[in-house]
View 1 (tube, rainbow, N blue to C red):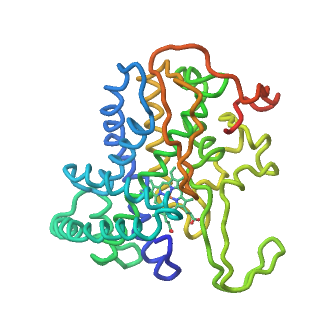
View 2: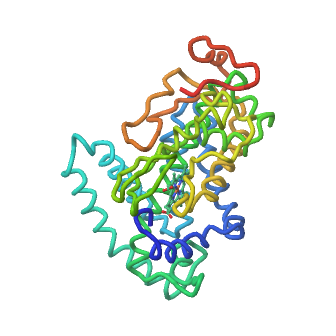
View 3: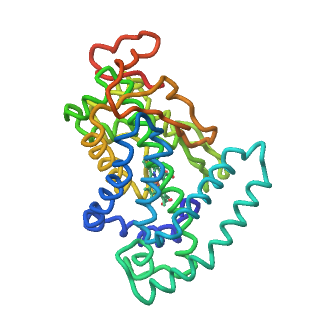
Amino acid sequence: MGALDACEHTRLRAVVSSGFSPAILKAFEPVVRATATRLLEPLASLPEFDLVSQFASPYCLAVTLQFLGIPTETHDRCEQRLEQGLGSMQHGGSGGPGLLRAYAEELRECEPFARDLIAQRLAAPAPDLISHMLHERPGGHRLSTNEVIAQIPALITAGHLSPAQALASVVGHQLCSPGGWHEVAVGSVPIPQLVEEGLRADGPIIGTYRTARNEVTVAGRNLPAGTRLLLLYGSANHDERKFRQSDWFAPRRQPQTSHLAFGRGAHACVGATLARLELRVALEEMAARLPTLTLVSETVSVHRPAFPQRSLTALWVRPGTCPPQRAPVDGAGSPSDVDGCPVY
Ligand code: HEM
């Protein structure tokens, strides 16, 4: 969907986006919460664990697969494919065409499985996104089997990776803040604000590529048709004309939601409402079940080399109490009007 232009994009997007309506998400919230609690329960008794691989990633994958309606018994296989896909993005330069070809082959192998699942949902719709895409007709159009097949891998990838990366990032930043996790546990930092500031300050997608279809003028510069552009959302989110002390993670700052972490315009993230739901629920359950969470070490700023994604490779945390949090980077004090920590 991200690569299509109007009118095809408009038609397809109308169906997919109607599957993320407030009513659908409200009905889905108990599944999200049950997934969070199931995964968090065993972690609370461990001396320490990696938040990325032991919670954020499996949680967001399980939520996405359940939202789409992918049967539980195939979730492990989906996880392997995602790892392979991420590997091909990381090694796009060095591993090159071989890795991409292997990933493409894997995707092709998914097709019979997707076709079979779609046949089942056509015969008997379930309360999931795949059924929704097959049966709903906003504007009088519904999607064909082939169109739904094409959406499934893209939705699984987009739906799983970015929220997992965002969750690890926001927890990492809050743990590095002077108030630490305690502020979240006692509710002095509202969780929706924490989510928005995490997305603004260190969102999981730094930018996206575009090609100008027609000649266009942007900020006084004339761009001929065919110009390749890189829209840097991550940079816009640190624009000091918009956000004071923009390089500080400060969950109490205002305004909260005017960032570009989800893009903007015709292609703005279709899953933003689901992403916000999963982030909020995960943080609520973490605050309740892991109230004394702390960082194990300072090795929080190792990111995967997978531009334009920004994702921590690991975030080791300790559920029990431990020594005080590290001070802000380079001993820098918090600016007087910002209550937070520098973005690493
Ligand atoms: C924190 C989590 C997420 C972030 C930060 C994020 C960010 C983005 C961004 C920056 C774009 C591109 C916007 C543009 O091209 O201007 C995008 C597009 C998209 N996202 Fe997300 N996303 C997240 C979660 C999700 C989820 C949960 C889903 C679905 C389950 C999803 C599905 C999509 C799809 C299908 C598109 C393409 C939309 C279109 O081209 O019309 N995303 N997202």
